[in-house]
Image 1: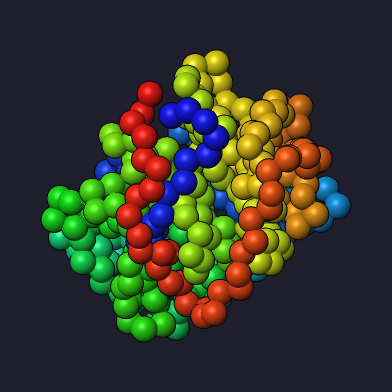
Image 2: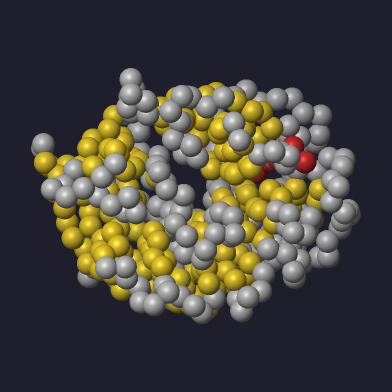
Length: 385
């Protein structure tokens, strides 16, 4: 599509975290998971069959890693989730259907394991950990069945894993919409229809409300959300049916969803992975970090909604691709691991580029709960070309 940003108006909003071409229940991107407050991270380290949990501390003067090995190595499919107190949750699949949960933490030179219990995933169901909760204490898992999706509190409860919600349909993804860990967005497909993100209220028994619906037929997914500013990063095929585009909107606003041309690359996939925090009520000023994947490898893109340009930067050698976090001051921190530096954190400071376009003024939302974006028909729609 030619000529500047494409603008579309949404009629409701729903949440998802990645491309929904993957199977429902597909795991959140694996490799390196960072807590919501940026203090800790965890990954599977080691080689071949000798895998073990490794916890990184990121909030000190220098990052450092602590290995958390057990008597038995971890399976490649083990899922990890760091908590704000430094413990690491491990989810393991046993016998193809039973999922066990444990907390690992260092005790001197040894690793202590606290077993939390198990969840059965019968039949075709699949269980995956959701992204770290903003409260840093609780951990949730999603179990996807043929017609329903169940949400489990697997750490932070009083009596081991407990079911907290059941959502009709097959869900994927998972994006937190607030700072308390109450509102969760999921990408949902009902009865073979299009994917639409929904908001799930975990304090009201899993009450579901529409979150993203740009057109009735479009697949509309939420990739990231920033609770401070309300900025939403969206993937939808509404502007080009059959072809996903990366766009942005504002939670609780009447502004349209926009699909900037600068976020579309012909020979590479572009996926957002971090949003600058602390930009209260200023979504157009939030810096967004993007992972760019092409045949030649992966590198970093940096963009702001107020800009019509995306800066492309080389990633540090050994970058754990797709992982990183912003400071409130606008410094992008990228974790990397090489033979010479097995625990590194590169800092990229990207100065803002001048842009002749006016800054969009966003009204303060009148309510705290997520509300649908403006219900209006698609405007200025042009054929893909």
